[in-house]
Length: 201
Image (cartoon, rainbow, N blue to C red; front, side, top):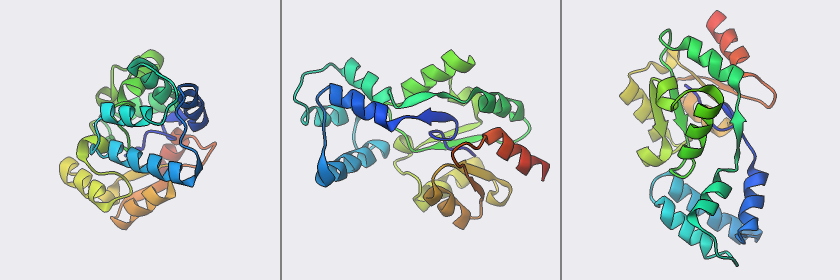
């Protein structure tokens, strides 16, 4: 079971911040950051629609911009897939149950799906994984216990026989409490090397 951002695809938060600032969107200071994170939580759990999210952020802007400009800025966070990892995962398909579990939102999905097709020739995540779980669809997000419990029930996997790879400690800690084998991916580590270690163990 895999996380997406920081595991399969690179992220550049600074680039997105700069793109948003170019549209006049600034949420400076501690209060601004707290409000932004609250909005993001609502977006990633489906409590807020993508258009409402964009319109709310537009209220912090000093400029006018189109929905297309906002979507481009919001999607600038993705730097590209690790193709060695993607090709390795493709080789595992059919041999092991492959699951994707990501905290994400409706605005980001078209961006990484497009990159997956352009860079790896794969039409979508459902062609790479047996099951795909997105937080905004489920109405829950990592590291909340309920999202892992949902995945277990829906997929029928045995946590004790399932390796979960995520780059955030709070997410792997939560999964470990439910019996998953876990690996927190560190900067510079290659997913395929981690998988080879576990598969050969």
